[in-house]
Every structure is written in structure tokens, then in C-alpha cells.
Length: 296
Image 1 (cartoon, helix red, strand yellow):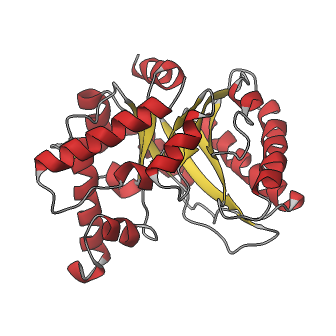
Image 2 (cartoon, helix red, strand yellow):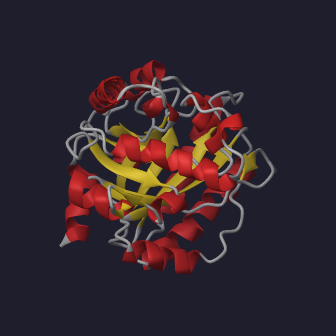
């Protein structure tokens, strides 16, 4: 059964989850880092075509396989497009052995009480059903914590878990991502509050249900051990959060049981004008180094 094979790969595989889910707000910056300036496109349609071409180039690179890349998080428009003549999710799993996830959040509200919670997600049930039909295994949703405000952190985490319950009911596995701003004052204090808030929510999940946690790399190595070892947590993954690849890998390697789910740190050094040979060698090196830092 495909779902069981995907589950086992995410649960036990050695490697990391690639984040290829830049959305409308983050796509221009991602394209700029890739060497494509805003003057190169004149509409959202052209912009999303360019970012899809970048993602497809990554996904079809020889090194982008399930040997080191356990999963990939897709933007909704990527899920709805094709890679090498197949629906993206189907291509990733059938041709590359990579488990597909879908980013479902619609961006962030303005900061209140030191956090940015998620905006409403209209048509969520329909999106989840469509994702299942297209072969998606799980979802990802992101909020951001910017200061050590306990009530704000509790509300931020609670929102994530309310939506996660709906996702689980649709037969998908949610990646819960309450990102801590790496430049936040009192980052370690924030992480202590966040740890307790997440643990309290995880404990309330129904027996037999599991979530994936996507967390900012902590100031204290192995700080999230209780979450990693929790029976209702399938896996803990780390975002790069603005750290460059070398710093993100260094921090990641200090944390037992956490694997990467990098976006910007994964695509670092890639450029639209690179030859395939240079592009493939650059992404292969990044994949190898990120996988090596993703300690089991």
C-alpha cells in the first residue's frame, strides 16, 4: 500500500525533506536568489511558471532521489502542474521515491501578542480531498513566533493543532510549523515556552494519530528530545530559518533525531544560467551535506 510505504519512509528513512513550497509572497525573492530579476516577468502567471521551472529542474536532477531526499513540500500550483509529463506528486513518488507534501496555509496575519498566526484557509476540506486524490501524503502550515509572549505562543500552537485535527481526519499527515524568528530577542526563552505548548497539544492527540513538527533549530542542542521521542510525533524536522547552509547544517548536526526541511539553504548556490552539469553538481553537493547533517 502506497500510504504505508510513504509512512515508513518518513518515519525511518535517512535523509531530509526538501521545502519547494515558496508561495506568492516569497517567490520573487527565491527567483532573485536564483538569478531571475523581477524585470524578467510581468505577471504572476509568468512568475509562477519560472518558479515551477526551477522546482522541476531540482526535482529532475540526478541526485534528487529518495536515497537522501525523503520528501518534498510543494506549493499548490506545483501540485497542480506536471513534472516530466506527470502530475508533480505522482512524479516525485513513482519516479524519484520522494514523498510529496502540500503547503496549505495562505500566509500570516499581522503580529499580535508576539506571534503571527495563520490567515484563514478557505476551501480547506476541498483542497485536502484533492490533494489525497493527487497522491499527496501530508501537508505543511507555518506560523511565526517573534517574542516570548506566553499567551501568544499558546494561541499560535493551538491554532496549528485545531487545523491539524481536520487534516488528520482527511487521512493526511500534518507538518506543524510554528517557526521561531532566528533574530528574536530571548530566542531560548521562546523555545522553552514553545516546547511546553507543543507538548501539551501533542499529548491531547487521539491515540494512533501522529503529526510531524517543523521547528527552528534551538539554541540548546537536543532541546526537543521529549518531542522527538513522543509516540504521537512521527518526525521532527528543522527549517533553515534564514541561516545559511553551512550554519544550518552545523546546528542541525548537533541535534540528535532531527532532520532537515530546508528551503533557501537547499537552493543556495543554484542559478538559472548554470549549465546542467554545474547545476547538478551544486544540488548534489547540497543534498549530500544536508543529508549528512540530518542525524538519525
